[in-house]
Image 1: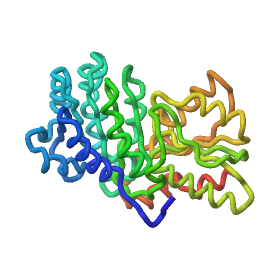
Image 2: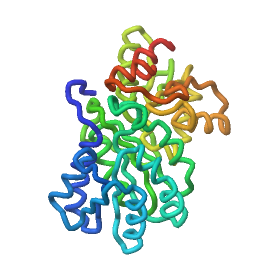
Image 3: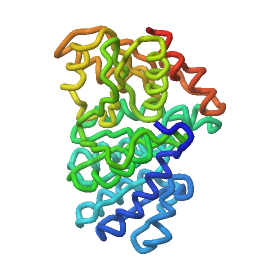
Image 4: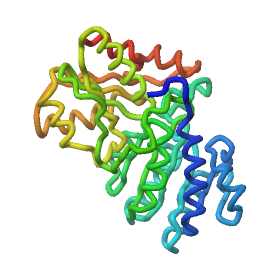
Length: 307
């Protein structure tokens, strides 16, 4: 992990979307008056005839994307997570997931790491909302390399996808040779003293904890669960059998997110205690992203205290 080389996954999204647009003329992009923030403006400048600014009308954006998908287009509909998963939930449920349409919902500015935008814009319920929808694939990426892979890979699968992206710049974790697969978690390290399951911005925090614990003679593995749904059951069960302690960490409500998804697998397949770190069923606050992560207990320090 390169802690000195950071990039926000929303930026990686915009760059990957531009490259994908060059490769596939069926890619169209919709945004709701936030193109400079979601970074879809990179695509808009290159392909103005395939970019549609829907204004502050997120529900219309999703419905329009659904219609475009029935005409052979592959729409990427982008806005902040609070507007995508929240304001447009009904349209996602009934106009995209129910008819199983090929719409990619790419939500930036997820979690409390939106920072100073405050509680109203800090979407910490979106994983819960999206993973309970039949037919929906849910992906939460952790760095630049993984995000660029995901943006292109989801264009190859036929059906609804929710891609969760961050405003906060995070370290580059992987190199260009790293292989990913939808539905398969990525293991970092072979420790048996514990497993740290993480997703999105918290993966780099898990790796920091891993490195500091190693200095104390405690060896843990980090599991980057980039695909929340379908979740990698085999990896979760394997880690439960092979390691002494299980911890999950996420920039999301403690209810319904990554920890809950892992707990469901453990309950059904291999009952084991899981310690869940996340936002403890409360709304966020206004403040700098790094300060909020410390306030809500989702940094490396909080993981280290458990070992």
